[in-house]
Image (cartoon, rainbow, N blue to C red; front, side, top):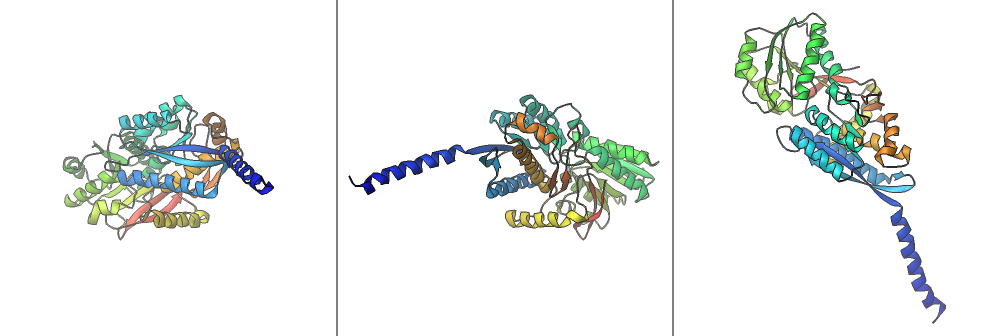
Length: 381
């Protein structure tokens, strides 16, 4: 046998061995995402999920290494239908799948009950959009959020109603969800701190479509502002019915109503400068270009505009992976301490957490609507 023929199988064996070593140096990192992909706010859930997909695709394109191993990121996406029971089932499914971390959920009402399941399993959870203060007040080491909470959001809107809209009387409606109730309570505290009178308090639910009875009762009290704690899918029809009843009060709400979709949902009842809402986040002037670039990339990738929270989901994924890189491990118990002390510059601004897991120095962006388009008023802290 010639030297040449001997070398061919040897070269093949070496190549095979090398491929085996390279394969051993790769690791799969599973990141869970949960949001409502079905139901009335599926457009918001899909927006969140798209933000996670964009981050995962970007990370895989970069070729990230963790502890000297090349990481391949996989997204495990679950639908919680904005329902607490479905949310806990989705959480358990992700725990059973041994995910390395979870981004979600969207709503406070699903995020809070799911957080215990993740905490019991020791799996870090970053919510990109749940704003109820209770989420981070349970004493779990695994809970984080990258947006301001209802105390900041609702309180700021309450004070804005008094200071800028010169409201003397306000009426408040909430949808009885953890989010809606929480943001409405904080709005009332903020308004009352400025001497504003709450003349009516009414309740609905997150599936309701008929508000004539509660709006008629409110109309009799002649409020300057009606605040709604809930989501855009309910706020749109509510605005239409306010117009039909001839109610001219300004309409205010939190991040749940502050979407691009509100314009379609409310139609000609939206008006110009009639609605004021706040998003639990926002970028200062110096960070605007980064956010604009993200929005353009998102539209190119998914063929639709960002609704609200896709950039925060994107940053939440990136923050989690940054902690893994710093720890040199994707194991939850190893990278969790790094996550707690992270300092990260994201699309949505600087991200660092306080001891409870709330974002430090969270910003809010106030918006109104003009010509059917969401228009920024101001970024505040």
